[in-house]
Length: 307
Image (cartoon, rainbow, N blue to C red; front, side):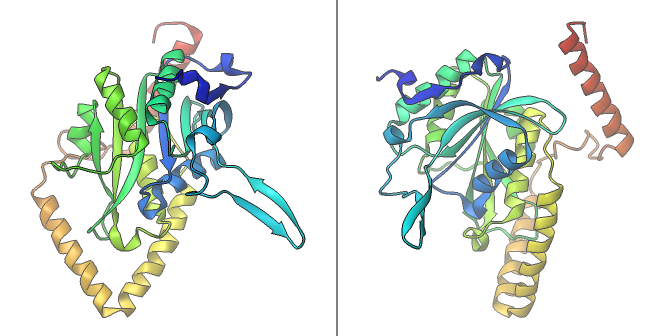
């Protein structure tokens, strides 16, 4: 195999990357129902502080003829060429927790070398876990929560969150291969497949981005700002509901999907990761106390004192 280090370049401030962080990944280019992955990564980069840790070589990994980059034609000359980017970032969540974010295009070529390169970077920074997301269209209604299928080595997440566990062959993407290799090595890895309403697969469905954010939080403990996405989703769903109301055929379709969804979930033993053993949601005071305990433990670790 070619040297994994040949396809990426480290930034100059790489020494500032702490060891033992979670790595979060989302790559675009294959199936991205509801624009889940593109919205997810773009939102994180737009709302969180981040610095580039490593940049992958697009000339080696990307088929430009299949995914042509955009250049702007300004009357009589060309401006603003936007080259595609695949980068590893050091980011911080809403309460200052650092993590690594792998975002950009999915490689067209050299998957094994790319996978080995990501694993090399994970070993370098002693990554604690890997979490990645992608999305597929499913016959489910937009009026119900987005379900997920969880894969990987995190049995806790699979048991509490995975609503659909099929036996099937699927067309793989590059992060499937990364998960497979990490699983072989016994590393902590979780893949979330978001199950998006098929009639919204070609839209940018804000609830899909929220599902990606929530799934990542459940896996890593990272906390993300979501108010803007929630407001966008309320506006989006209001428009969809209006269209459903005005279209009897669409209303019948949604009602049928709701009935099938509810029947399926009635037979599910799945327990929400947000509830306790009795199925009760924690109170606001309990959530605040838990957050305060977390922050106190984090400060103790940073000070070098016992938690």
